[in-house]
Amino acid sequence: MIIVVLTVLSFVVFFSPYSRLNNGAGGGGPVNYGSIAGERIGAEDFYNSQKEVMLRYFFSNAGHWPDDPARRNPNFDLNRETYIWLLLIRKQRQMNIHVGEDQVAQYARQMLAQFQKAGISSPEVFIKQVLEPRGLRLEDFEGYVRHTLGVDELAAMIGLSGKLATPQEIKGLYVREHQEMATTALFFSASNYLARVEVTPQELAQFYSNNVADYRIPDRVQVSYVKYDFTNYLADATTQMAKLTNLDDEVEMAYQKDPTNVLHDLKAKDLADAKAKYRELRLKNFEAQAADTAARDFASKVFDLPSAQPENLALEAKSNGLPVHVTAPFDEEGPKDLAAGPNFAKQAFALSPTDNPFAGPIVGDDSVYVIAFDKKLPSEIPALDQIRERVVADYKLHVAAGLARQAGMAFSQTLTNGLARKESFSALCLGAGFKPVELPPFSLSARTLPDAVEDHLTLDQLKQLAFSTPPGGVSGFHATREGGVILYVRSLLPIDDAQMQAQMPAYLAYVRTQRQREAFDLWFSHEAQLDLRDTPLFQQKQTPSSSRKS
Image (cartoon, rainbow, N blue to C red):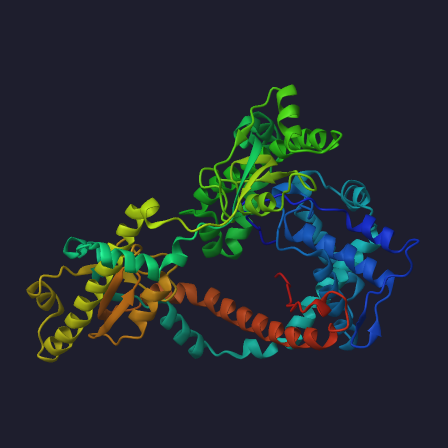
């Protein structure tokens, strides 16, 4: 199974799909689930598919359910995934895809084997410990396995053209993506021209007037909050970690399948480091779970107090011996002094003193918060005298960046003429008083910027400049926010043949799999647009795509 690593923790209250379904099918009358390609969706089909989607989430997320706060995926939408799964099942029927019982049994054993170290030693234990607590049956699991294998066969059929790439074509792609380039950059930075900028009152006032919208202070809010730090629950988390015996195996399995992405996702330098980083992440997840539980207990007491009003947070906190803090005013980007996460600001702006005075628990990067309304501050535009220092700094940077661009464009022509006379790039730069920076080699497959570049360009900008310039040529001047850059491409470096031969089998399989997936996704997107247009979900102008996981 692919290990999904969540580097940003978020908890969203997840109401059981089964309770919603039961309510919808009750006294309120029949539910209209729409139709797929003109065929009505029955309630039983919808419920069964929804159960299989829950199982699909469980097996795709290392044994975690959608309502597990430690591994909550904020992009998971149960209804959307159910309609997609229903369509995939219908397509299997249309193409007469039938999965044999032996295949189902063999694949089911493989799926359950990954949980043996967690104590799931037999199908009977799996039913008792995993399925029944969730209101699921063995038939639901069998249906999920059968349809999962059917999706694989469907994808193989539709994406067959993706496997037609020849070894020669794959080799060309490998060279294109992995051949490194030797480059030298010449940066024209506004900071080098700041000393030349003079500020007059008239020009400053005009600059402020022209850019007054940039200085508008947006709507802001203040909230009071009680905070539960993750680290206060280290002991509980350590106890939970001790129960996990297969963490290293999880990482090793994922690493063997896709070492590059595992190291990238975990920000690890090698397999040993990846295992350590994954343990740190799981420990933090357990800390977060414990903090969230404590915050929920506190929040329920606050919400249950009569006559809901913002002051109740402080009253309940005082009775529990908990400190209450008040944020500085903040806009929709959230508090600057709290690692509160993206959901904090969204919920804070939804508060009101009467109708909705409380929110939480809200999980941040290192704490869980319960918040209460304090005040709202309307948008305003400060007078120039109130923010004069900021406006002066912006004005000087604006003018200096313009001077830097002028110098860059002028020198670009000098470079072109000099290189035509066979003069060297370095000599031309030094002769004009500029200091070029030799960059470390990089390829199209590079994922990180060289340190010397990160303050000047994005990775995509650097690649675009470099790989659109022929070896021995210059890119011409490229303007940036802080000035600009000229890139000299010295040469393409030779490919390491031994490394290429060693990586080619895996790269060949990777490219073919990607093309197969792209062909399938393109087909499925087209089919979904047509066949799901009469469903309630997709009538809301949502565009589905296949979320099949390999």
